[in-house]
Amino acid sequence: MDLKTANEIWVWGGYLLVLLCGGLALWRGGWAERTAAVIVLVGWFLTPVINATYKPGLWLILLDVGATLAFFTICYFSRRIWTVLITANSAGGLLSHFANLLLASDHKMYFAYITASGLMGGIFVALSLGFGVWEHGMFTRRNADLRRATKAA
Image (cartoon, rainbow, N blue to C red; front, side):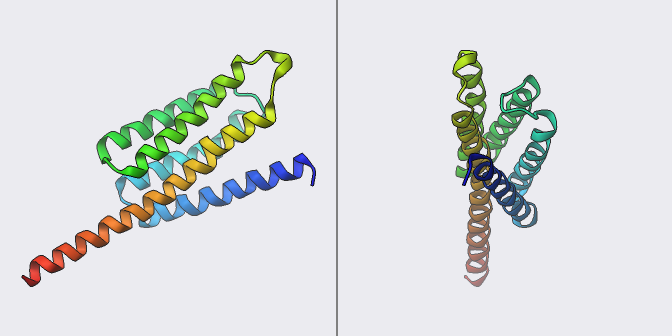
């Protein structure tokens, strides 16, 4: 398998994961999960439109700064574990852009940059969102059980 095929599998697998986790968050999540899902879905589908190269551009960096700040705001107001994970992974993906920009132009390591950016800013962000849906379901079931126990008592 050549690198181009491996990259295409990686990218399309990421899109599938984002659609799955984002769709679950829109369907079964609370306000924090739904808001984060909109941010993730918009970000994932805007990225190839605003950045067609393997190096980070200004618009991609601004998009990721906005997403990271939005995740931080959700984290601050929701006080959920998964929001810390999604914010940290988004910040890691953002930092990979700056690390790539700091390298000398003849030492660009696009494969390492794409891997770090794809894992931290893509796959792990989507998995954090999926964890958020699971966590929201756990809180919802626990609260329903508490309400039933209170009414029975």
